[in-house]
Image 1: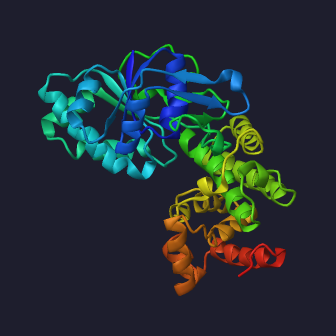
Image 2: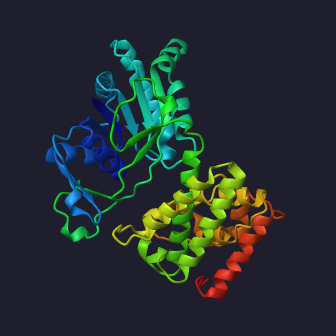
Image 3: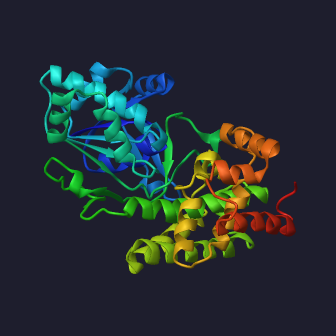
Length: 392
């Protein structure tokens, strides 16, 4: 079987490649970075290192990569493939969708339309919806009908972490990548148009439902919270912060708040949610996973949006009478994230210095001053100052 991966970053050429390679799937990569494409083709091979388990490292050979701008080549590869996986970042789904839409138009002209599937591998709310809307916006009525009849667009949930090298000074091959030892990828079965592949480590799940939101509001909420709190304390790595004697109890309370919100507020199965949060904590406290807080905390303006990982679950918790005290504390920490190499963080800090945190709460988080969460976050800022974590 053949597949296309759009996005040759840590998830695309790391985690997704790992699972597909173990299932003997032939992969062709497309990436927006010409430099990455050139490196992959020149070197032609790399290693997927499994953090803490070098005996499980996987060699990837015969690498083929093209720029995403090569619509003709994308259409030609799609003609021979049953699956396209996107690992491009959720915010890029509109632009990726337009690229896929142009490739589908080409596919129509070369007579290559067949039953196939596009699977999003993004940490995002409704990435498949965003992607499909962008694809269809490029097609005329006849093409759109062909697309809907022949192409399934669905989501997966990425539960594995992909990181940079634990020790960059020892890297020999610049396209090597590192992943957590967690070989499992759930995919929305209802979206699949082809016969379901009998793949190991990849589960096609019935009633996919709220799984992506469950993941975002459990894993991403907790690790983002720890990252922002850890940054205030001057820490560097995720496991370092998650095991910190002051932060770990806050993380435990965050899981408690999340669990109540998702079980009572969204109707998610309790046993499933408790297992989800237990697995998440084990992941973020695992010292074998060397992951910088700056990677997890990046783009705070997006993460402070009303439906994202901080405000979203907090509102659900409040709707069922649960006060998200720990998440509010993490949200307060996010307001002061000031990593100089993060453009979003710098915009956030400029906004805060010029207009104040109240402006951010109202215009980014879209909270009203009379809302309880608004006041809880303001109180949490005072708590951070009292702890000595907030120096401003």
